[in-house]
Length: 317
Image: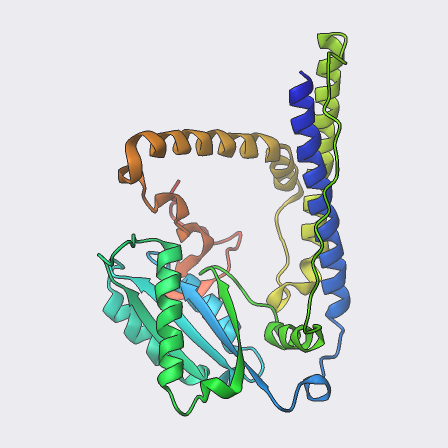
């Protein structure tokens, strides 16, 4: 029983840390919304910062990628300092048509725009996001180095990577530059060892007390879930395009109550998946679990945000 309690205490310490850091970040972002960024007063005249942004995709809806790239294209001075590379897999369906659409729409909106195709059969390489991103990033850097007009050696390139469903906030890269110039050249990290006395013996007299302690931890867990919901609400003022959460109160309560069962179910699925991969190998792996078709609603080829009056015909589960 003591071992179970130790594990629970560790997990709740992690939750406390996560909630504290997220609240701190949300309030910082809310204050930062009204912050005036003046790069011309802080940037180094001897060096110029440019950005290289990488997005990889496989079979995700193209509309989802459009939303991500549009959020990059609307950044300030995107045509002068933001280069983007989009990495596809060799097995991506209709990759030639996708490449034509992306180049036609976005080549003129960024300083450089590259499309890469991760080939099959590379030595020591298997298809996947990490290998795709690794290949695409190396190819993008190669292209930039070969591009004399880019002048790769005389600029500082900040590399940013994201998922196909990431939406970058307004002036995200200006804020990134401001933080970069304010960083000190040297950062000292100190690691301290903290001694812990191991728990010995039986400290819980009976099962009843143990059960009540577990119920207390469950209540504490739902307190962290409440803070998660609160953070989501507090973050609304900094959402791009002033998007609001229009979920009904009944559904929100249902979501709140189902948080613990859902996370528990996911943990069971992960354990089963780990055991299956351990026994059967990578032959059981697929991309079905990472499908993001339900994140967008398609209507006449356009990407729109989900609304109450328009829902997808089906969801892949």
